[in-house]
Image 1 (tube, rainbow, N blue to C red):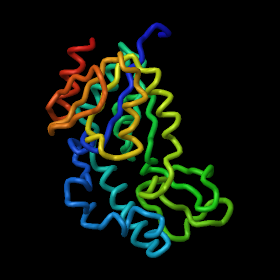
Image 2 (image 1 turned 30 degrees about the vertical axis):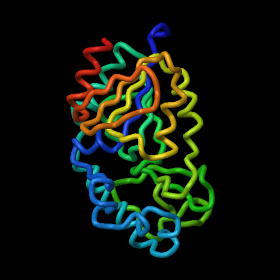
Image 3 (image 1 turned 90 degrees about the vertical axis):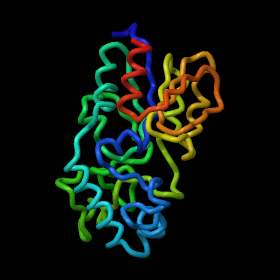
Length: 228
């Protein structure tokens, strides 16, 4: 086990899209027909808590209805050959459900809630509904365990440390347009082989990159053929 090379993966919305999870960047800045500012900021939470809770309840309900796809399963399979460390911008649990054992969530987790007065109090949500009146042990309303726009990304430093240890690095399902996550590629050592899987023309300002212009499932199959 100890002699396996480390494969670090940065995954984004494109990998979940193949499972049927909608991505807001595909809809002109709308996310399930809502403006980002109305459902995914702390200001929105203060302004209309009921709407924010309902929005994430619907996303959670949708997550219960979808399954991992071939790209998720390919990444899980690669654990046979590599120490696979997944850094995901996604808040779903499809990587885990496919069998991946090391998943770092940059932007939080949809199936969890946390206290509004103590960020360290995080709880699993039973089912898909988080309702008004559901309180943490300190008496405050539970909020979605999501990093909203404008909030700090506490897991970015652990993610950067993982990138610095990579022997191989894969970007799949993300356009490298969302910071600070997009900056992680610069922590990967220059000599490390890098793969960018995306159906669109994406360019990373780093060395040793192989671009695979394909959707996530097809692209991950091609990467696996190269590195295994």
